Length: 395
Image: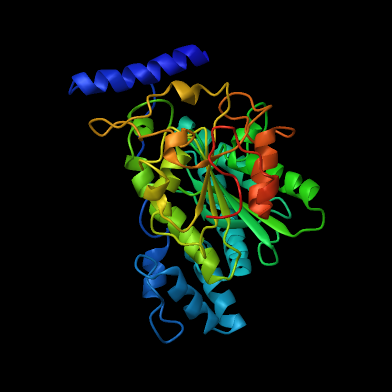
């Protein structure tokens, strides 16, 4: 779809919605968010193999999860991971290496289940085709060396992949995607690969290595919420963000519980709405820098609405169609002011070389260089726009 038409359609949707109680959304399917505890929770709750109750994934905080696992022996931990891989792999606060193991086990089990479905003569042709696609997807994810901090096959699928050594990293980051990203597309290759969480993560680590050779870094490509599909009611409201924000907050609290350095969190497009909601309850030990780029808004009116203990940065390229999206809120539609506007109060970084809505992490762009410097804490080297009030290290 041409960019001009895309901008016009989105604006038209917002305008139509303000004058009519019945809106025919132009594109985009309504999505049901994946919420609640991970699959396998019922069996986990019923497990009495340790002679005591296991912490309830629906209610326990990451710090409590960390304390629980720290009180177990190596054998007990491994046994739980093998008995309940879907729970352990998605339990924020559990030992990171144990989550890698559990998620590999869960991926293998999912691949085997999809294989059986693909060969089931009683299944429909469409179901068998979908199952074969899932088998190929899982085979790719099970390639040697890949490490996952989360895997949930429900719905369109959610996943979080780690690039680098998270246990030894001095500087860390998390990438949060916008629309149309899920288990099948979070690491897709092709022309828009730098708009995916995995493409962002790989590009960021490469640039950090150029900026600070030998420095240990790690980046998490997080696709841990149900993203909107297309341009429609889900993209114009905060419903999916409200469901996804607690999941992002729990991820960050889980990293803090495992003494991982507080990450810089990079929030693309609708991901800014998710991050805006999550940031309000997080502190500097859980989140160091919030970077909002290609953003339709955050749900906050200014930086002060995102909490006063983190640094907030913004970026918007000159060719990004998001600039034409109405940065307002009306009757539950829209996400408020543009974080790249001077009045919002964020530090706005330069983006020279970035093209379109998904080009901020493209190698060679000023935006990517600035993002790497933010993650490394090299604030004096970050380039801000003339309109930005300050770009130094202070909060």
